Image: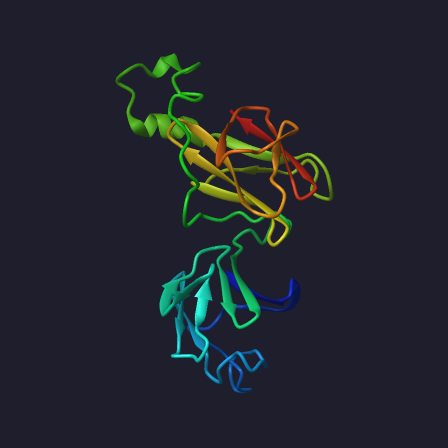
Length: 229
């Protein structure tokens, strides 16, 4: 289920679940999402839900509609996209983990972080049993068997299996990171937040780092252990 979090100067004003095929946004009171600001046109933009996808379309507004700093006419929204209308920021979030605590958002990723070198932590080490004739499916199955276990806080002890290609963890607007499944293992990358997450007490420096069994990830005050079976 997708939702929009509307904020002004970093303060969240409202949250709106996207449940209709068409959701209008503008200054006039008849819009589904009303933003009473002169920088916002009467009928500024419309959000259209097609299947599980949500598109935003600018309705020839005076000041335009921006996504992640770029002006758009019509664009598919991805998880964590920030729509900017005037001084207002509207973050689009996809949360399909209603059974999991709200600080942990698990979802399929729209864009994976940059790949790390295949020479780093190659799958072959410790997996010589696959041999040169191993089918990619067999290797992928081996990589899938991983999970993260929460070590502190209200959800301490909870373990979540990483079933998706990209899993994001953290608190939107505070600190978010991603864990990406690759043919040669898992990569951990910084997504958003002023401070970078850490692995085993060492703050992330580059775009992404490989994860190994037992690594402890810390972000937004939550510690998680990466378990690769």
